[in-house]
Image (tube, rainbow, N blue to C red; front, side):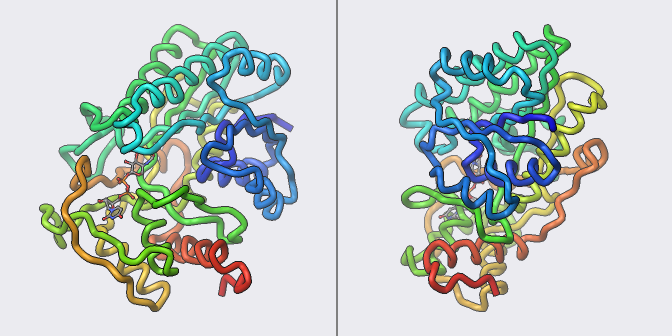
Length: 346
Ligand code: WQD
């Protein structure tokens, strides 16, 4: 059984990826510093798969501990690296935290993988690297634009660090996955998104408004040059995103990759406006959502949705869930964590 390290494996996308790795027969070791997750997520994973991943609580900024971990687990066949800070606004206020946690840690991981010899590395990147792309849908060849935030910059520079390292280390094979907007929860509602404090992202804010935790959703601008005036994004079910990680890892393990550094978009290929996402919530739940139109949010791009043909063709992966599927899973999850006594997913 091949052993895979998943850093940040108790986070939103990480935990869903652990489930899919276990479903494919991999042995999983999770490292997480629990800064944005809780150890109880492991129970959710076990509820779904019946398998408990090995878990080590660790801050990957501790280089000695990273080295000791790789010395102890020399039989790791691959690393999927989710562990990073990801709040755009926080990154503007505290850039050094982001450069240390997102890039310093990446360097430590790569140093260990280069020492190992044959290594497979999957990097959690983001469509943020495209900024406001000139053409839709966005292909992987679209130019990377100046980052709008230190967070976005860590994804751009992170990709460059990996590319440059792969260029001179033929035994290191890496894939960067550029996520569009992951949303939803596992259909079992045993795991899902656990935003801390007031959600920055649209989906958890919608479901928390729907459940009554938030008074009203602010729609950040309806005067954009889009059909209904609100921004357009590519919302992809988190389980589809997780499955893409397994497909990418298997490509590297089988050695079918054409070069030792490849990049893939992870989206559905369909753009949805903020108002369309609200309509999805109302369709799925049968409830009206309380929202108002508010001023634009600084840094928002007008539209971003993926050309997914490369991942479809090369990884043999395609998103299977619709926006409504993802919305239903998000709503079921919200109801479960807020009203566990009504623990139904009907
Ligand atoms: C989506 C749309 C908002 C909240 C960010 C990061 C990206 C990735 C995903 C980490 C926008 C609108 C939102 C609200 C709203 N994060 N909105 N009211 O900004 O596309 O991407 O999260 O990897 O890197 O940049 O996602 O969900 O914040 O916003 O109107 O209360 O919803 O203006 O148009 P975004 P989002």
